[in-house]
Amino acid sequence: MKRILKMTLLIIVSAIGLVLITGVLFVNMSPQFGAKSEGKSAERMKNSPNYKDGKFHNLEETVVMKSMSYGTIPDYFTNEGKMPDWSIPVVKVSSEYFEDHPDSLTRLTWFGHSAVLLEMDGKKIFLDPMLGEVPSPHPWLGSGRFNDTLPLPIEQLPHLDAVLISHDHYDHLDYGSIVALKDKVDKFFVPLGIGAHLKHWGVSEEKITELDWWQEAELDGIKLVSTPARHFSGRGLFDRYSTLWCSWVVRGERSNIFFGGDSGYDSSFKQIGEKYGPFDFTMLECGQYNEQWPEIHMMPEETVQANIDLNGKVMMPIHWGAFKLALHPWEEPV
Image (cartoon, rainbow, N blue to C red; front, side, top):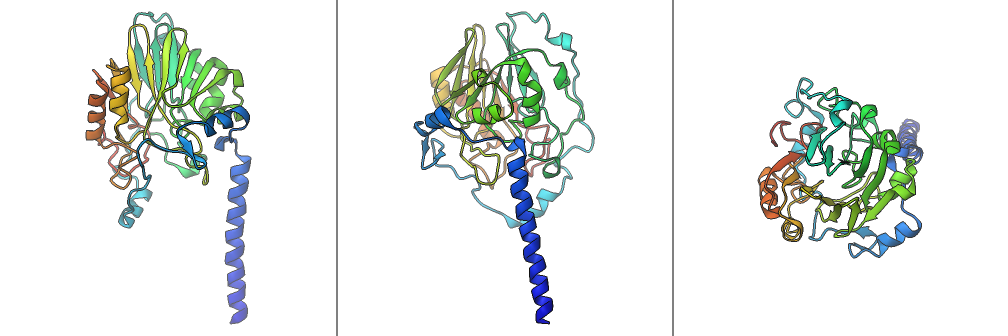
């Protein structure tokens, strides 16, 4: 009997060890996890007023998981009601759609979730271009996109003057999308620390501009401002808060746009509105919320209040309609 118990224990320990070794090898050998900042980039992070004790912090105290309801655990493994049972319709466009667009007209093309291509003052700026099938480091680790096609295949997208990234979560910063886009993008504007991921994936360092909160950059007359958001970051098991997250102000000659990225509700929306508003158009997260994590995502009512705080004239809900990342019905947010 003792011999059987020892053999059973040995098998269990060996299985656990094999899983751990496989996990470590997967993380270390998979480029999609990105890389850590070094040199001047790492120094800038450490000197940020938003960085202390080895990590970035929100302006207001924030808990990622406020509570845990164990009764909801089975819901994570079911899709009924949380995903459409058909491929949701997508308006297709051709590559000619982006040609000869008048500079006087500001236009936004939504690719689902939080991916938006903004045309402003003759420039094409892609915000959080997550165009992959699954928002995870491996297809087995996430649910697929609600639609089986995009408005335009990634290889047919036009030359892009800039890409803006809000944070490094997989549903916003996608390894495959960046690799496919990097040679047709002039500039990447990202929060502190994310430049290391891009360089690891083959983006030239001279193309990358990293910004702290409230820092401004210019793209041929268009003002880009990295503004605060209430969220967190991380692509692996042990790198939470290791890179900064942000929202974006994009102010052109004729239009003033706000892109919220991911954010729980806090006083920063009012600060941004007072400093850079009013906004002609705002894009604010309206999905993937739950009462168990109320401080890192907004309930729909808070999304409306955030737009009021920003002094936004027209609001478009984003962060919904593409992936199952929460427990609510897929069509509920909008």
